[in-house]
Amino acid sequence: MIGAPLSGRVLIVDDVITAGTAIRESVEIIRAHGATPAGVLIALDREERGQGDKSAVQEVEQTFGLPVVSVIRLRDLMDHLAPVGPVYQAGTLSGNPVAVAAGIATLDLARTTDPYPGLEATAVKLTDGLRDRFAAAGLPVTINRAGSMFSVFFTDEVVADFVDARGADHQRYARLFNHFLDRGVALPPSGYELWTIGTAHGDAEVTQILGVAASFQG
Image 1 (cartoon, helix red, strand yellow):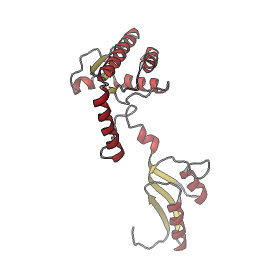
Image 2: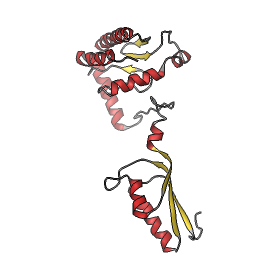
Image 3: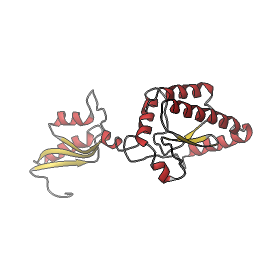
Image 4: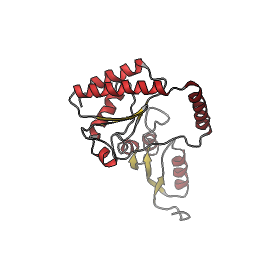
């Protein structure tokens, strides 16, 4: 409790441990008042590396001989995020001046170069190829496309709304995501998310993606 006298066995509570500096100072203050630090409780173990080969938490435990208990570890938190877990997380650089400047420059390029016919042609080639490869593996799939954007749903049903999308096999999509990631291709992590084609995606990239898709068995 803030302002309470330090006496007896004292539990140190903190949000995280980074380099252990706050813990070290707390231990010194507690001992200077004749009390005994009993342990450390942190909200999140970020599982960061400390000064040496051990984690920051392990270094605190060994340096001060104190048990360190966390409410949750970073790996536990990540296991709750899509595509492994049920929580979808995404963010943008809204309002970031660099992102805004990049967006304006992109719009200027779009006006002068008209990339959209080429983008759509690439998307058609890619989506047709994905359908063929998933069909060859016996995997039901519905791919909805608008221009150069498309979504992949592992279902043989029409997907027209959220209820339809929720009925797709999202566990299979998670396996697809990891299958691609293991082979150097980063897909959108959620089956609810759209795939987007950029001007940097050409025949070589389409061939690579379709090659990886051909080896996916579900």
